[in-house]
Image (cartoon, rainbow, N blue to C red; front, side, top):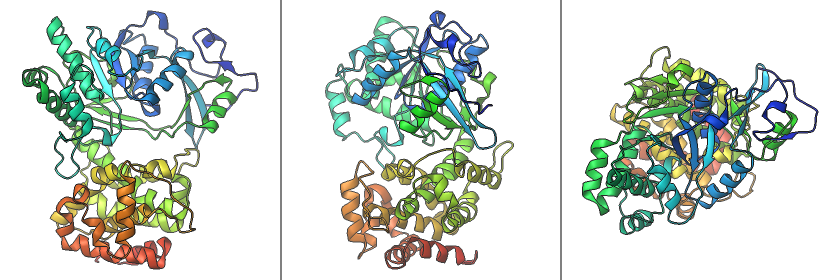
Length: 503
């Protein structure tokens, strides 16, 4: 680790300039021209480049996995913009590690070698996934991108995108439709199937990816769906690393290291990757660079999703209302930090199993340290984004377990009330909260109605299902939401924290 930055004119990031970069910067020691592809990654954003791409790069630094290079891909207009930026710098990425103890350091990652052109109908992506050298298709497409019915957790076959792909399987608009079309070609050409690897923050993410792919295939080609279900593998995994969005500050940080990178990535000094060892066409030896292969992925992902991801929601909605810009700012706010710790220790940790070398309460302390890192400019707005997916995926499963075991739910109910209050669209200082959810208009209208009728919020069956009928939750929610409107966020948080643990 080093915090020595450069003052020379920044060099444009490229293969040609790698050897001229400052000596303090780690860069590929392998010949990128000799890399061959093995993985297509769809949804190639910051997280992938700071996490899975880095693990593969570190294997390549050891002379391993040189036939597993990554090809980027996507299906949205944003992805084509990203492709052009990445292509201009030979698909290299500058990673900037932000460690509060030792400062910052930079590393150039070279495990990605191409990016499929993004066009309507996704023909180039389908053809590339249909070639025999591609043995893994990985995805980071956000938690809400798997066409799951929030209430039933089943496949949402009525979604317009799914209807389109079922009716037009050769020109799909979704990544899943493209995967199915590629697998169809592979079967027709006698090419073995690939592994589908979900890297999003979903419990049982491999099983969810299987559900989406097999269910969509079944709408147009039941025989193909059966072949995919029997022949493909979809390993569950848990991924963890805090990776902020890239903006002008991050680009400036790369320039301070002497690198002109249009899309650098900043990240914390912590990484974790836990994977089920279920790959139908082989895999890189990621365990040689710190990944964990285990059959107990569920326990790891439950700990992470409940303590970290649900913990993010404990902070973010209150932080938005209080006008706190980053998660570190939220942790520096005394009342909000106390609220976070009490909800985590009292209402979340009891519903988390220990994993090897880590107890839930110790993991909470680790998360508190990571969240409080002032160098990680992880915005409250980013963490609060898409609450309709994040609350249903991260918070409500804990609430259901707590209700079923007669455990405390006051704090979790307050978390939901804070979300409702935030969705009303105004901070406590009167400033507006911009639309921050794919269903913002509905959430905003419901939140405004819930100001006078709290139960109106819980009547959103798509989100809460039968939770509105759970009296302990409904009564606690109906108490907290009016208090947030009448007394404000800080006073309400303090009132919860002042409650004895016996309540």
